Image (cartoon, chains in turn purple, green):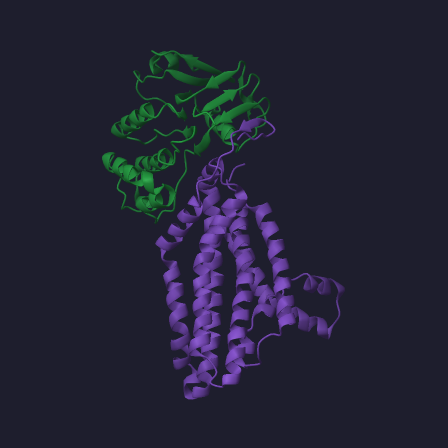
Length: 272
Length: 216
C-alpha cells in the first residue's frame, strides 16, 4: 500500500505487534522499583495499624487499614507511577527509540498508548490489591453493610483508575517534550491540587467571593470527589447510581481533555 | 501483489537541509536491494538525508518515493541502562528469529546477560544492529537506514555484518552512512554529498581509496 506526504511517498509500514509495549513492560519489570510499591501495598495496611494508636482500640484497626491501603496506593502511584511515566516519556524521545519506532510504522499516538499501557499494567494490579485488602481484610461484619462495601470499593477502584490513567499519559507526554522534571512536577502538582487544593479554594470562596478564584475553581480538576476513603472509613454507604454515573462522566471528560493534551504534547524525538 | 524489491527513488530537485539546503539531487537516482553507502565529510548532511527519508524531517523541496518496510537506526540510539540485551531482544525480536539473533550475538561476542548500560560503545552498536537486522520481515521488501553503524565496531563484527548484508541483499535495501577507515573497502554503490550536491556513484570495482579524493 502506498501513502503520500507533501514531499514524500512512503510505503505504509505495518507495525510489528506491540514491540514498544513489550520493551517498556520489560524495562519497568527489570528496574524492579515496582516491587517496593507492591511490598508496601501488601504490608503497610497490615503493619501500620498495628503500630499506630489504632492498636489500642481494636475497633479502629479496620478503618486504619482502609486508610493505609488507599493512602499507600496513592503515594505509590503519585511518586513511582508519575515518575516512571515521566522517565519513560523522556527516554523514548531522547534515546532515539521513539524515532526508530516511528519510522518502523508505530505512530506517535500508538507509541504513547503502548508506553502508557505498559505502565498501567503495573498500576492496575496494585489498585486491585488495595481494593482486595479493603474487601477481604476490612469487610464489615454486618451482612447488611457487606453488599454496600463491595459496591463502594469497586466504585473507588473505577474512579481511582479514571484519575490516574490520564495523569500517567500526561506525565509521559509532557516529559517527552519538556523533560522528565516538568512531566513529573506538573502532574504531581495537578493531582495534589485536585485532591486538596481545590478544597481549600472552595473554603476560601465560601468566606469571600472572588470572580477570578471562582473561575479557577470551576475549571479545576476536582480529584477530591474520586477519593472515597472517608466514605469507607465512616461506612456512609456506596454512591447512588446516578451520582456515580455523573462522576464517571465528569472524570471521563477530564480523561478526554488530558488525552487530547497528551497527544498534542507527545514527541517521539527530541529534535524535530 | 506487492513487489519484494525495495526501492528508494530520489527525484531530481530534491533538497535536504534545515534552513539552507545541505544537499540537492541534480538528477534522479533510484536505489534497489543491496548495500548503498552514504559518504560525506562531517556536517554535510548524511544524518539529515537519512532523517528526511525516515520522515523525521521535511525536505526543503522536491520529492522522493520509498517502497518497503522502513527502519531508521539513529547513531545515538540507546536502550534502558539496566535492561539486559537478552531482555531487549526478547521484547523486540520475534520468536522465530530470536535463536538466530542470540547465535549471532554469541559469534560477535556480545554479552547478552550484561545490562545495556554496562556495554561498551561498540557492543551497544552491535545490539542495535542485531535488533534491526532481525526485525526484518523476509516476506516483504525492507529498507534499513543505518547512521554510522560501524562506529566503535571491531573488524570481526563489521565483517560479519557485511557478510549478512551480502546474503540478504535481494529484499533488503541498506543505506549506510559511514566514514570508511581502510582504503580497500569495496563500495560499489555510493551516495556522495559534496559541495551541496548529492550524486550517485556505482561501479562494481569501486573502492574507498578512489572515492575519498572526491570529498573536499
